[in-house]
Image (cartoon, rainbow, N blue to C red; front, side):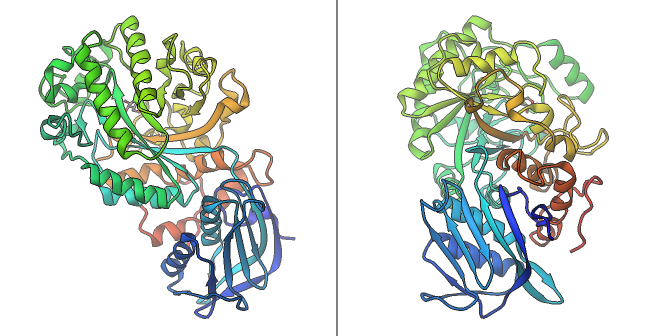
Length: 504
Ligand code: TNX
């Protein structure tokens, strides 16, 4: 018998049974259905096999039929049957899209002939939130690169894209009411590299592309710290830099400059900047930025930052957290904040916290994160020593940092998001894997850190713990089968030695 987990699938489906035969896919295979997923399927098959499938309105032998039926599968779920023909039934359009991603991974070639294994898959995600984050501030990635990131992460069934749009090194989204942000503060990036920014039309284009791939975009404006770039454009909004010991010694070690108010900051140091907490103009600014972002963001969330505000006095930080989250609620969106904002007693009800502490919490991290739940919110788990895509794979890996951990593929795979904090299981929305971009000077560098670990995190977020094959041994065999697909699509993945990579 062929075991379900021997299927070449990442993430692992909830259940699968495998038959013995195979269904050939040829020029004469027809595609039936009128969903946008039909075109996505045809494009994916053409890209992988060179075969351009044609549409048909009527049943045809061996055809691939796609449809949505809300009674056949839950939201984002699907059933995929391969026998004399193929049927994919999505619980909704997203489910159908995920069924297509599964079919893509199942295609294989033997002696020039393409086919699919006979199989019956019933699948749905474990967590509703499966996110990736791209830091476009420390280094900037243009619209084409962000679309590539969406292509490759949505193929792994990620459904949220968090864009870190502002930080000390640059401001990356045009705001009509505060035009100097992009005029004066977008050209810079870490290490003196080239910056850039998105016009609101660029941003809309990203959102539309993400939507077509069933990803919700979460824009982040990081406040009240990580705001040096705001002061390059509008000096009256920010305080003088506060130099902490860690910052000074890190700058010395790396040979990087220290922040100077009003001048672009090109180093990697954190925790030195803060907006002015007691100026009403600061809140005019936050209100305008949030309003403009809300207008171009169809998704329900706006991320307001909150991490590492080491230069902001605690009481001021808490006051800011309360005001800023209330502003997001007023703008009709759900606030998201890094877990530190959970220190604020009256953080807006329903705010979603993003936990970036370790898998064994340190200091006040757990308490802060748990406070979001006490305030009627929920949590996204981004444990830095497991889910951070910017950590090195090995101690001497050329890209990445090590402050949280060295994270090989097995470590990214082997953690349990519900086992970290003392909250009810349903308070955990899911997982987000962030890519911070201090060390990634090109998009090829980004791909090298993201792949293959995003595959591991996709499985943590999608696959039920009890599914047969939800184990490292099975995962490494299945992950190996993605190599030929990634190579064909030009994905610059790191061929980690833990994985028995397939030649083809
Ligand atoms: C911490 S974790 C940060 C970022 C850095 C990252 C580098 C968190 C919410 N903030 O500002 O880019 O470490 O790993």
